[in-house]
Amino acid sequence: APPAGRQTLRERWREKLLAENPAMRGKAFGLPIVTSALTHGLAVAGDLFVGENDRILLPDQLWGNYRLTYEVRLGAEIATFPFYAGSGFHTEAFAKALADNAQGRDKLIVLLNFPNNPTGYMPTPAEGVAIADALAAQAAKGTKTVAITDDAYFGLFYHLGEPSMTESLFGLLTGRHPNLLAVKLDGAAKGLFVWGLRCGFITFGPGDPASADAVCEVLDAKTRGAIRGALSNSPMLSQTLVEKALETSSIADERKAKAETLRERAAKVYEVVQQPKFRETYDPYPFNSGYFMCVKVKG
Image (cartoon, rainbow, N blue to C red; front, side, top):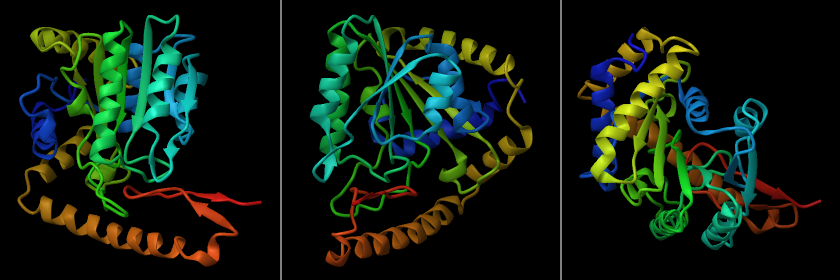
């Protein structure tokens, strides 16, 4: 396969993104580039944008592999902010952390993973707007901001408690400000329930629509170089299977059925962990989506 992946697969995935993310429609963003699953996409984003002693901002509930990818491998520094405020995402802490960590820095990298691993939380629509507005506001102050959205569990939205967002932050960030570059990471593993095929995607959303095509062309070339210099290319077999799946008329119904199975399980867990008899043992962290949930153990 070419280093950037099968051309038709890239086009089919772009169509999927547009169908599932209304905010992306009419925006200028690049053609998705195939990675060997999402973790490889994180590494590619690191090759492109993360240098030694760079600061990466994440919520304090985070997937531990981010530290291995960015701190151990690349020498960057991860800073965190409180994930929760009451029953929702702590948008005020996020905005404050943006300002604090941008002090004295020309560049700031922000990594947001929704639905979150490990908490299983997806922001509400209002929280999503607040997150995007905070990033755009910081960019407007002069901070060159790379906003990476890890959308590994995209599509698994259960609306437990109250309705959550049902699209990626990427669409709200693309085209917002010349100092803000959105980078979307996603893949087929959870989205199409094909664990082990190792087929992911990285997509770039420049901040200035006028120069977006030229920027994406350069980033596409640099990404192909990063892939070629690391693992040559992603498996042709996996790409072919994902491409054929996306072109199958029954795929939407099949995905919906699997997601409904997970929703039913999550709803049962939600019901059980809220029971008063557990309050002296643990408090559940808010969760509404994805694969996981967490509890805060007492004692």
